[in-house]
Image 1 (cartoon, rainbow, N blue to C red):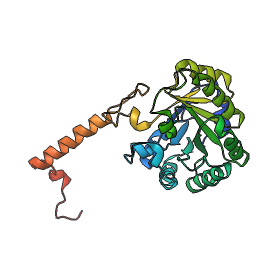
Image 2 (image 1 turned 180 degrees about the vertical axis):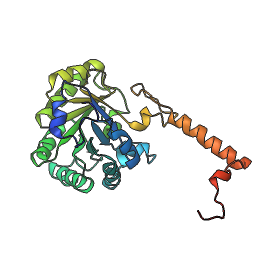
Image 3 (image 1 turned 120 degrees about the vertical axis):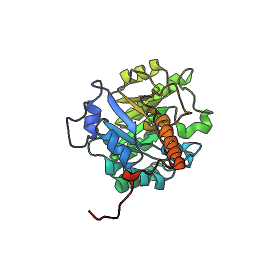
Image 4 (image 1 turned 30 degrees about the vertical axis):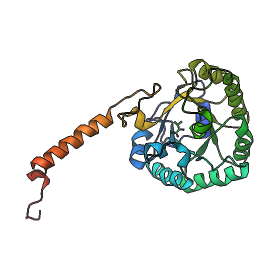
Length: 273
Ligand code: KIV
C-alpha cells in the first residue's frame, strides 16, 4: 500500500486486502512526535509493549502495565491520521480468560482510540481471539518468538528450527482460523515465514522472519540507531541517531563550558520589538 494516496485512516479490510500485494510497512511508535514522523510512511503503527524496555529501561516486557499502554497509546493516537494503529495487550492482561482479555482490550481501544489489539500466543489463545473478534475487537496475533514468554523460552532465541516448526505452523493456522486479521511472525527461519505466508489467507508481518512475509515491522528506535549497543541481526540500521545525538550533546557541553553558548543571537536585548 503506497503512502499519501489516502487521507482517511486505514481499516481492517484495507490490511486484509494487502495480502499478496505491496508489502505492508509497519513500525512501532510510543510518543506523539514519533507517531507524526512515521504516519505518512507506514500502513500499521504498533504501540508495542517493547516500550517498557525501549523507553522505561525495564529488563523485559513483563513489567509493562495497562496504564503504561494507555498513556503511550493516547500519545501515539494524537500523532496519527492515516496509519492503522494496533496496541499491545500487556503481559497478565489477557491470558487468564477470554472475559479478562475482552475487559482489557475494550479498555485499550476505548481509552486510546487505537483500532486493534495485539496479543502473543498461538493455538492456546485461539479461543480468546475468537471471543474478542466476535465482540468487535480486531486482533493481530503474535507467534514464533513471543517476548512475554521469555522465561519459558529461555531467552530471545530463533524459534521454529527444530520440532517446534510444526507447532508454529499449527499456531499460525489456529490464530487465522480464530479470526485474527494479521499475524506477527517473530524470529523464525526465512523458510518458515514464507511457508506460513503461503498457507494463510491473512497478512503475515515479519520481524526477523525473512522476506517472504506480507509485511515487515521493526522497533523504530532500533532502525533509527537510537541504541549504540543493541544490534540484533534482523535489524537494519537506517540511521545512527545515537551517534548523532552524542556528537550534538558533546558539542553543547563543550560550548557551555567554554562560554561559546549562548552567543548573542541566542540572547535577548533590552529593547521591546
Ligand atoms: O512490542 C513490540 O514492539 C512488538 C514488535 C517487536 C512486533 O511486539
